[in-house]
Image (tube, rainbow, N blue to C red; front, side, top):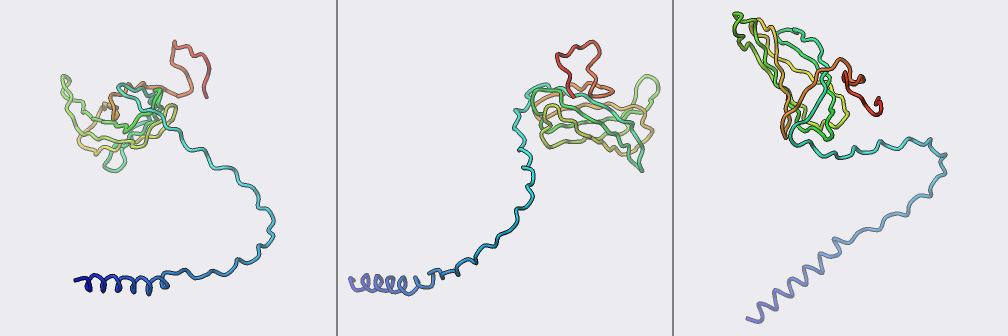
Length: 176
C-alpha cells in the first residue's frame, strides 16, 4: 500500500521536473537604441467626461419647439427640438403621438398613432432633435402628443425659441 503512494509521488515529481523547462521564458533581445525624434506638435487634451447628474423622480419639465408635420411617402413625419429645463437628467424619454380625423363634428376618431424613445440620459440644459413617424391611415387632421419618462410624467411647454424667457417671467441672469 505504501509503495503505491510512493510511486505516485515519484511520478508527480518526475512530471513537474520535466515540464518546468517547457514553461521557462526565453530571453528577449536588448532594445535598439532610441533615435532622437523632433517633438511632435501638441494636441489638445481630450474633452472632460460628462458628469453624472441625478435623474428626475416624478414630474420633469421640458420646452418644445415643434416643426411642421410632413407627409413623406406613406408616413407622417413630425420633428421637434426639445430642451430639458429640469434640474436633473431625464431618463428614457418617451413621446406618444395620436392622430385624429375631423370626425362628425361631435367626436373625432383615432386614425393612427406612434411612439418614440430617446434612450440616452437627457441632461439639464441640453437640446435634442426628436422625430416621430406615424403610418398614414385615413385623413389625419389634428394630433395629440404626450411626453413621459422612466420615473414619471413630463410637463411640456411649447415655445417659439429657447433663448427668449417666458412672457411675464423675470430671470436673474441671462443664459446663452
